[in-house]
Length: 338
Ligand code: BTN
Image (tube, rainbow, N blue to C red; front, side, top):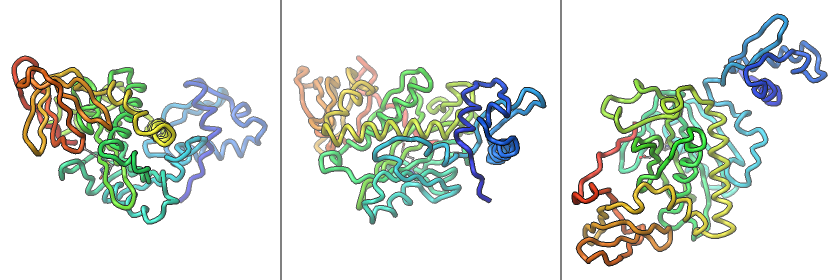
């Protein structure tokens, strides 16, 4: 059954920040019955409202499921989110986005799902999340040649996610090479870029998982917005924020070129200035990471070369592992997606 969600009405309720609003005020000239019908529909969709016989209605919380109307309403983006599809259960949102790549008219298509039956992470790992707990999202793009260069789309996804996570939590969200977003060393999101006819940026962001939702072995290394903020978050608003950041950076990339993303990517890096071990096809190198640049690559002041700087192109970097500073190389604990 389709539920029609009256978004301006929802906004009026939310803007009251928990206070009761009378039906007359909510209706703005509309007949009482029609306002009441719209309120019923909001509740039927899952928004949590409290009604009082004299005082009116108060907003008490978001719907547990993603609300397409709420996501799309006055989104105002140029490319990302021009079309949005929300699914209950899919194999992988990346697959659905890739299936739409036959037509360039689908540039910016966003696929969201409440559940994935075979979500993918990097390096052949699985990406598992309890139904309705996360953002499972894929964006189909047709980037220019320079924006399709190695690493740019992953950096785009990581920067956008890190910015949204930082804005929502007030905490310092950092990018762990190449595709993890972490808060104080705990993974909150991962990015998986896959290429075919177009390019798909897949994003898994731990939104409303509780500590108990993570397998025990991830308790020390993973986190979620709910854990950090101490409350359930409105995932539809979270999607809106993320689509807007993705669109803003993608648009800057088109108009200013790939370098436009460099400062934000560099600033959010967990590793800049640290001792790291970089594995390349020609061997491993240890040194201080003195620069990161999406075009020039990584600049390492190599320990066994008296600190002389050496550059590695992004596509040559197989792994980048932080060392225990001063104590030589030491592998970082592997982070497995929840
Ligand atoms: C990683 O950290 O290994 C990347 C995880 C990416 C997971 C997301 S969830 C939405 C999209 N669909 C998938 O199958 N994978 C990505």
